Image 1 (cartoon, helix red, strand yellow):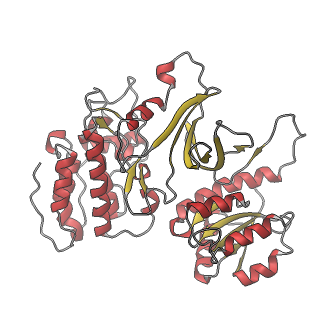
Image 2 (cartoon, rainbow, N blue to C red; image 1 turned 90 degrees about the horizontal axis):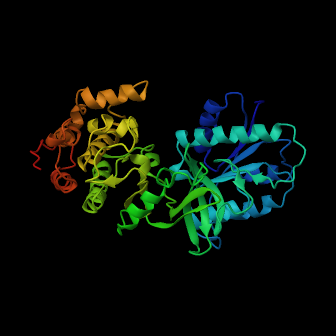
Image 3 (cartoon, rainbow, N blue to C red; image 1 turned 180 degrees about the vertical axis):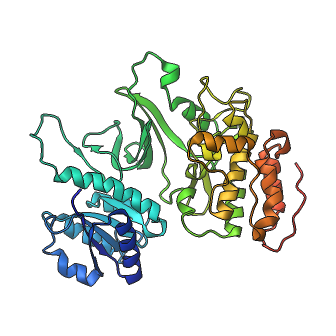
Amino acid sequence: MTSVRLLIVDEDRQYREWLSHHVGIFWPEASLQLADLEEFKRKRVALTRRDCDLVLLGVSVGESPEDPRSIGLEWLRRLRDQPGFPAIIVIANDGNELTAVRALRLGAADYLPKRLLTPERLHTILKVCSRTLERRRRPRDPPSAAAPASENLLGKPIPNRGLIPGYSILQTLGESDKAVVYLATSGELRRNVALKVSTQLRDGTDDAGQQLFAREYAAVNAINHPAIVDLYDHGVYEGREYLAMEYFPCGDLKARLQHPISETETLDFIRRVASALCVVHDAGLVHRDLKPPNVMLRETGEVVLIDFGLARSIHGGRGSTRTGMLRGSPYYMSPEQAQGQPLDGRTDLYSLGIMLYEMLTGRKPFTGSTAIEVLQQHVSGALPTLPADLAHHQPLLHRLLAKSVDDRFQSARAALDALAAVPDAAAAEPVALAG
């Protein structure tokens, strides 16, 4: 596309330069202007889409619309009424779920807490933004009788009409080949929810195969625990299956790992996830897709497991529902899951071990140019070795990542007990681990 014109606004000069650097990596030909809030106040009156395509606005939004620190919300109110003003992505210095929703309703194209903004997340947003800007620059087609869709810079077009009755779509949170997840307001619950909607239309000819979310809804509703996501609603509307669930404004563990994390914090997270696995396994389920994106964070620091779409009964038999199909992330998949063998709770403990290694070292233990290469390493590759300053955690790692299930911890409870006994300090001596 032609050169993109961006205005980056933030009071912190170093942060403006950080944003400029990473925008420049994604858009080398971009025309960038940097300004503090005082400069922005002077420029904004005459600023239109003829001069600028996008504004990255770093600003305080406070903790509520009435908060005197909510200068960002006040700016959005003013800019909403200014004809032809460029799209705005708010980078909030503070705020919460309430201010995020308020900002979106006031016309922000997207809202990002500064503490969660990483280069990876910024590049993802800019990638989608580039497609949106390119579409805006193309010649418009003649208007059709169908109602158009409004666009959100983070995801797919959002329908003007209600996609699912009873839910007002606010923002696209993410998407895959099978589903799109929206931030939505539930009219019945009067709260924000994450609304997962299937991208595949159901024709009613294969109820068992087409109800992608039904098993997840049934499985999770059998567990009532703070460490497991709350599911509120499930159904099919006009051929699309949907699932309404708890929304987590603090994001997931994958985003948290984009920032430095200490050894002590790592062990605390792993203990919390192991405790959540105890709940899942005690309920007779195997998660089968444990990975950082499926571990959500509360403001209190608690972790919550989500995405039980692959969960099965511990006594449910083989790992795949169809011959030759493997489901889950190759990077976190146990050797027995990679080979399509019967699974029990110990497969989740292997995934927990992968997460432990990744959090301690900042990299995945097994990688490859293809999924098959990664899976082969899980099956036959050497057990990963921690750096010398982390070697005191090697016994724990070996018990989690043992190739044979018989050599692993035999339950999540045993793993949790071992985690409680392992000291955090780098000078600690290796300890013997039972279970």
